[in-house]
Structures are given as C-alpha cells and as structure tokens.
Image 1 (cartoon, rainbow, N blue to C red):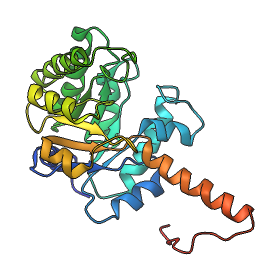
Image 2 (image 1 turned 90 degrees about the horizontal axis):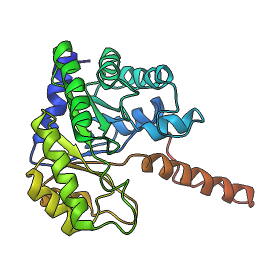
Image 3 (image 1 turned 90 degrees about the vertical axis):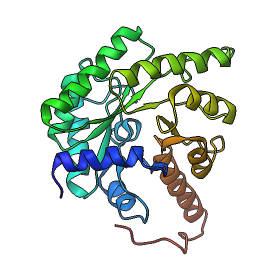
Image 4 (image 1 turned 180 degrees about the vertical axis):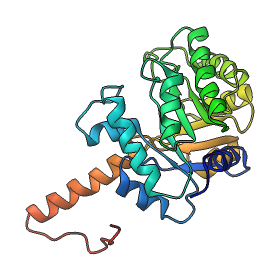
Length: 260
C-alpha cells in the first residue's frame, strides 16, 4: 500500500479532476472489499450511519469513537485505495478525532457543522486541517454544512442557498478543498450553490428517487457524489427481498454472485 501522504495527494487530486468523483459509501470490511474491487472505483468513503447500524447504534456519535475507529482501521487495512472517514461532528474535539483517524490510515473526512455558530464551525475545520499538516499530509476535508438538512419544511429555499454558500465559502477560505451540502437535490439550487462556491467545490449525496444522475451533476460542476447510508440500505433491501422470497417458498436470486 502506498504511504499516507501519497494516498492523501491521490484523494485530493480525485476531488479536483474534471470527472466527478463517485464514492459508494462502505461500512465494514466486506462492503469495502466489494466496492474497492468494482471497476471505476478510485477511493472509498465510510458512512457513520452504516458503521453505527452495524453495531446496533443510532447515528449521531452514539457509537463509541474507539469502536468506530477500529472498524475504519480494518477497512483501511483491507483495501489499497485512499479512504475518507465520516468524522460526524468531531466527537467533541474535531482536531483530536482527525488525528486519531489519520493514525489508522485515513486521509480525508467529512465534518458536520450542525449549524453551530460559524466561528465555531470554522475553528473545527481549521483544527482538522491542522491535524493533517501535523501528520505531514494534505488531509482532504469535505466540510459539511447542514443548512438544508436541518431546515424546516417551510424554510425559504433562497435563504437556504445563501446560507449554504456563506458557510461553505468560510470553510473554503479556512482551507477545506470541498464543501458537502446534504439535502441539496434540485437542479436550480445546485446550480446556485455551484455559482456561489465555484465549480469543483461542491459535494453531494445521491438520494434514491430524488437526486440527479452523477453524469449530470458532473456537468453542473459538482466535484464529488457519495451515497451515505443508502448503499447499506440497498444491500439490506436485497437481503430482505431474498428472505421474503425464500420464506414464501421460493429460491434465492439466480444472479447471486460470490463476492466474498
């Protein structure tokens, strides 16, 4: 496996390349190995929701950090690709959590702002980036703003776009290479945020039945598309469908592949 600095540089280059970076999120070793072995996959990203669910915890830093990091360590050790970790909101100390993630081989990560005061959110971004510099790597921080996902159903959409751009711009100025805006799915709103942040600076999550195709997001200037908890839900949906079929007297799907 390449050294940490090289993997970090590779991951950063993937975020700044003309082609959109697509990251189907993983949650354990076997999901990581299957995704890493898929044609076209160039890096991996973990999903905090998926890892927490694997151990029976609700998402939102309910899984102990040691347990969370141990699973990420196992994922990093099992693949030969750069790995980005969902740091959630930093477990109370974003810089220290990033430092520990780097120690297990992580070279990038998401960090939620949870709509905290902007100065506090920027300070957390700076702490994560400082942890990367201290380790001698270009840590690829996907600085997340929750402007859309924490908004009420009746929120003014133009104001949400403006707030996402305001916070995202502050994160970029603090040194984050890209900004993650979950909950952003409408074409015109994506175009407005890209205009505000610049092309190649926005990352999104693909939501089943709602999001634009990755190729169209690339045309709009989106840098990265990930899948969050939805890849695990795809797997669990297939599992439940197969269980229903065989319990009802049928058979397992004929197209099942030996992926483990």
